[in-house]
Image (cartoon, rainbow, N blue to C red; front, side, top):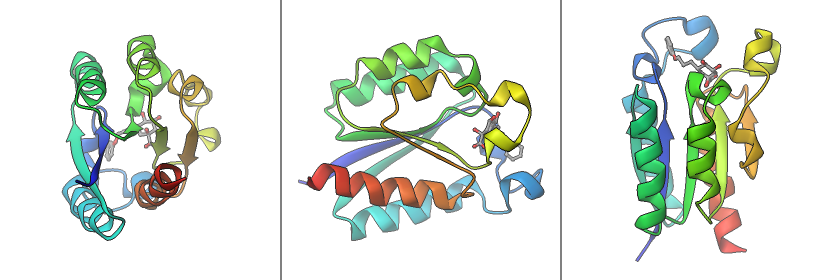
Amino acid sequence: MAKTIHIINGPNLNLLGTRQPEIYGSVTLPDVNAACDKLSTELGLRTRFQQSNHEGQLVDWVQEARLTNAAGIIINPAAYTHTSVAILDALSMFEGPVIEVHISQVHKREAFRHHSYVSQRADVVIAGAGVNGYYLALTHMAGLLAD
Ligand code: CA2
């Protein structure tokens, strides 16, 4: 049975590919989901891809990953990266690898995007690689789980 990786996305990422292409590119979130599905199969993994605009829903999904014995979590908490102790606390109860992904290079942007609560728990942080960051994260996750 293939290990399952939960890929969790925060607020406004449902709009990916429809606005601000100069920052976030022109690929849509369903495109990223499909590419992650394909890549995870090649890597011998399964993915569960989720997006919500609601902080509590993201916390519930992190808890669910723990309860269902997900092998790892890849998370782009979007704006909640910079505000959410609740998501950090939920991730801290998860025992597997956690990879934080940001499409944009947050450290080249406004000062309020430079701090991440989630980074306190993340084993790996990827920022600025565009949506490729998700594929890098999955590939790296496969390596971590094989070690
Ligand atoms: O770079 C990232 O992935 C971010 O997590 C994206 C968040 C932002 O608040 C973080 O600082 C960095 C914003 C997600 C909004 O996504 C949109 C995508 C396309 C059009 C409009 C919003």
